[in-house]
Image (cartoon, rainbow, N blue to C red; front, side, top):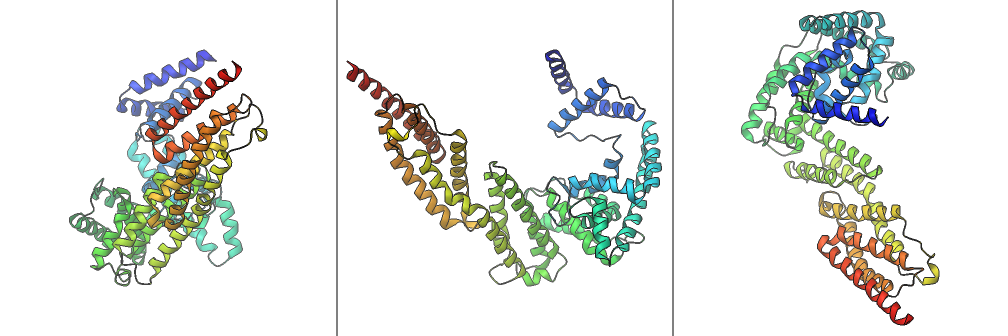
Length: 480
């Protein structure tokens, strides 16, 4: 097994030395081998490691054998790696695609899907990309019609809607299917818009805004495909705006296209223009950050960077729009800030108590000989301190100013008093309780490093060494 591990590692090192173009060619060749039925273990291992290397370097490679990936290619700008049960404007969770593809091939149009996917594989096998693209498009067209029929058939029957949702297999099944229909119907217009938009928009100033708005207006005014109602231009605009948000250095800048279109930051004037959709998309992106914050927070992972994104987006909405007057958007922002505050406030409030339980002075008789502080408890307390500091930095936009200021003052005051007492207890510790006293001091040093920085923690560590040396010297004198 050790030799197998070494062989795999050598394979990885070799694949890393290949040029990106060579990796693409090798992936395509191996996937074509899979299409021909070549399922050898060696080829499968090489393909697996190739894909791992490519993902690590964020390299884009076409998946020859992945018909589902080809079918869903137009959706890629709108796919997010997020929870499938959340609804976001103009976006769909990546995890929803596999169940929907399974539904299409299993229940919606099984015979057509099988026939066309077989034809697509044969075209790819002989490297006829034009034919393959035509067949993928034919598959998309048929799926659009069947999905529309499926939704229309249950439009007035809630029980039938629930049955269809169970068949599709995603928490937001009907909404997901509707989004796929929209994107596939507009795929040509959206592809043209993607080609015309800048790849990256660092500063969304007036010149850039005017140019982007011109492209969006042109896309919305384009002649719709057969069977696509002109009244759905508002839906097309939403997907166009999501595309723009993807290319902005900071997605909240999308608001500026709305204020420019209305020539005002007044919500009522913006709401009267089609580009009010830009604010809707911006709020949806803010809610997506809140969802990410909730997930990271509950998983116990660092959230400072997410808090910064949330703070910046919330501040931008408040400063770019005139939300001083009562409006739907001002109430929406207030609700989001309240939700974030409710999520974090209780955790912030219990942090001082965690420190007190860990660092409080104890009588020798209350210490189990040779015991130490629980490392998990120390980790939790340090994470709580980090949370307080992060929230304190961004408290103004998160409705947490009062609680973070009070808790931070409590933490700093307690650490100052507790560290002195702990050093003194370490100095006079006996052999039985010394390990516990040392673990308390070590925890205090860690907490001080988080609050005050490395230099202060270093001084405290030196003071702890002096206390240990003084204790040793004192014990020697007593024994003498």
